[in-house]
Image (cartoon, rainbow, N blue to C red):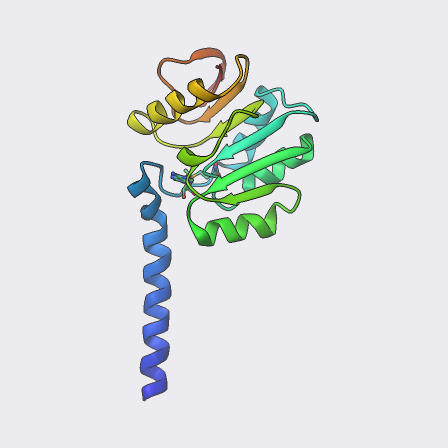
Length: 166
Ligand SMILES: C[S@@+](CC[C@H](N)C(=O)[O-])C[C@H]1O[C@@H](n2cnc3c(N)ncnc32)[C@H](O)[C@@H]1O
């Protein structure tokens, strides 16, 4: 009986962790977890005109789907993820990328050539956009899936993929 109780408690804790992990990043001001569909990732990277020498970031890289595709086109790929389980999965999946466990708002982005993000419209994107504009070189491309970014120069758009230049 004791073993069954223990097992049940472990299962409940695991389920609670997985549910909480979806929403917990929102406490830091970022988005919860929804992966970008693969066809959209491929389109977004094409629109970003990624080249081998570029340094590519995914801000809030989730389980690493974007990092895997970006690594096929580019030699320098970095992802930042705040949620440990997703960070761990991304590290296993995206072997050619550097996957950083941490808060995107604390990462220095000054070396970026291309930044991908799938966060939320409004306050979150505005805050990230301010950080990007303060840190990156002029001409750095910023690709946002699904949500536009206010106050940044739009250079290309296809459906729900927006490409800006800082
Ligand atoms: C909508 S998902 C996008 C995942 C991935 N980029 C993709 O497109 O498939 C947003 C991700 O950002 C992460 N995130 C939210 N706030 C963050 C923060 N402050 N620092 C790092 N990652 C964050 C979440 O944990 C989540 O995995």
